[in-house]
Length: 145
Image (cartoon, rainbow, N blue to C red; front, side, top):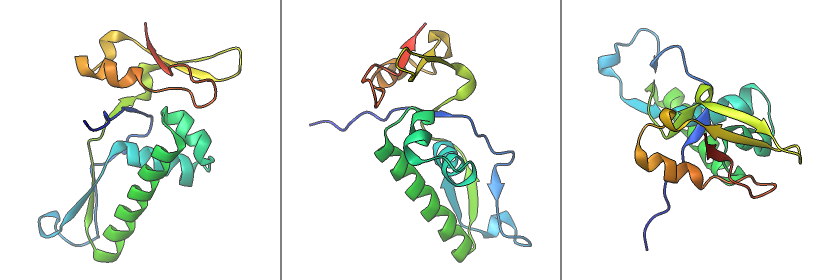
């Protein structure tokens, strides 16, 4: 049995800096924790913008349970970095920048997402994106135009 494919998440929050670290300590002397861009997006939507998990998950084009896992991971990494004095590096993840996504509302009031084929990073990404479904109406959230 093969592992489930990792789906890309819709991300709109890109940090201004690559590192966050304790003041007065050289980055070379610090251990670092990597916070992915989708973890930052989950953190931002829930804790900064105050969205409910289901609404934040919809914004990212993922299930509520996947959103919960991202949020839990982000919170654990941040508190570990604070308590243990580690640097936090912002990089990587499986995401699509929000600017490449076109959101359209269907007759049921749900948002559906469309992406241009030329905005895909790689050929395999099309398969991963096509598996994302609307939690309310079960239609594919991402279609290709």
